[in-house]
Image (cartoon, rainbow, N blue to C red):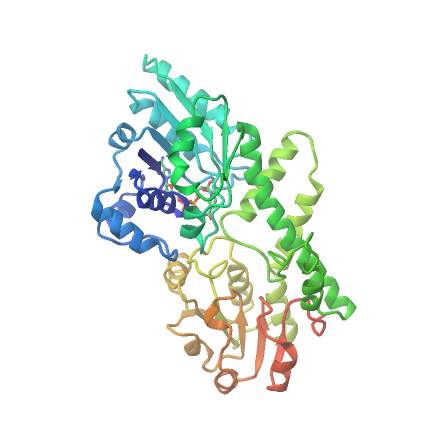
Length: 443
Ligand code: NAD
């Protein structure tokens, strides 16, 4: 099938690559000329495990093309994916300007019927807006062409995106009528072989499904963070509590890790957007408001612990920081807890020596060159002469460090662990002062 994908970001590029992998003929279009030029040279704009070989192979085979020429891209695809960003507006609601700009572009250049598929995460009612935009544009150009708008939200997880797209748990498709159903089945048939994963529904339900999924996941995290904070006050260990509740199959072990707050491009913005949507309906979404408030507070957990230990004024102090991306296996720094930590500690006068396996370039791009933030090439290099080690992201590379080396290199054996990676007693025996999340000893 001929497929066009608007937006070559985390979602668009991965989706396009897996579509090419199963045999579809894909053209990707973006407004970012540098991104397109780089992709043509084999420079992949994001780190995502397994993505580079797929892109290289299918760019070479010709099944995956990159362009900034929207006219050519629209002419190519029977289906037109919209996978552009939907960042938060000033009030936290999803900004649809990129989505609607693509809708207008498609309508401007289409000269035969098209199926327009919204992959971006968009508020309920967006498919109506996309439909209206396409209709208006066609009318203004005196074109009379049939088209369908389909909602097909994306559930990939950054860091496992290729696998998630190759083997999706579910493929949610919202349609206004039966017309695009067969085509959507054909498009996804290669991903739907083991059992039927396609869930067809009306458009508004599909749009809400994506927000409900992300908000449920964010709720699990904020709930566990609230329990962790309580555990500290009550002298309990949240890690015991986590295992104790996870063993109940109604609760399960997945996604109940306490930590220093969720980040990323999705949870913070999608929780906020659903709050704004609810308020637009004069409904106060009390759970979602609490989820957001708990998370905002949790991001200050590590800096507050550091200040409690070292004092409010941190001039002259240096901290080793391991982990900058919002979670492991990605270079994405959007809304990462590490950013709150860096901002808070440097504002108090500290210097940070940071290492991340993949997010160094992105950190450099965000922070530029600064005296109080040094980016170093290895996790060991970050330690030398630092007053303490702080861990923000649970990369595999940090799971079994040489604690003797850490102790030797640091001025003081103090470790702040935002992801509960180690056993407090073992660290204590090794002579560390160990601060973790919700583990009793840190009130
Ligand atoms: P991104 O910021 O990585 O990429 C968006 C791309 O769209 C950019 O390359 C930008 O240049 C391009 N773009 C903007 N306007 C354009 C236009 N008019 N024509 C062509 N290209 C244009 O975004 P992302 O993380 O891939 O997210 C895209 C959407 O998918 C968002 O709505 C997001 O909420 C949703 N989503 C993201 C994830 C995730 O993990 N990142 C998961 C599921 C859903």
